[in-house]
Length: 109
Image 1 (cartoon, one colour):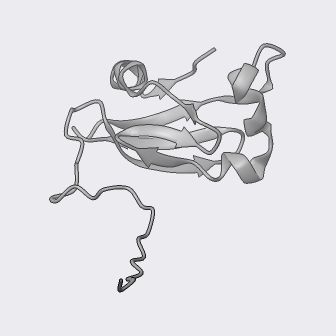
Image 2 (cartoon, one colour; image 1 turned 30 degrees about the vertical axis):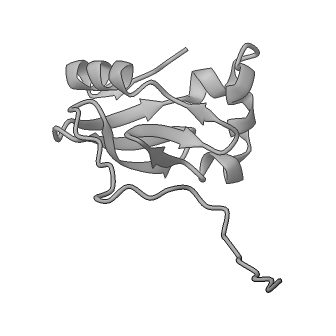
């Protein structure tokens, strides 16, 4: 009997072409700013500030308390059109979009 070794990498399947969220309330860009704030731009061009100071520093911050660590806060990224951080922390892009479209800023919590 002839043995044959096959190696496989354990990696997620790729979607070709890549999925590109296009709903207007999906986030296109995000940048961490001082004082627990973010600059965001959405797919439809709406842009503004997300002010997380009250949420992050609140005694009831829950999972968001981890973002007090500036090194973690600065790891903000976009996944599938939503603002996220390591540890499965994320923000609702639709609520954020609605508030920023109305006033240029969103202050959750």
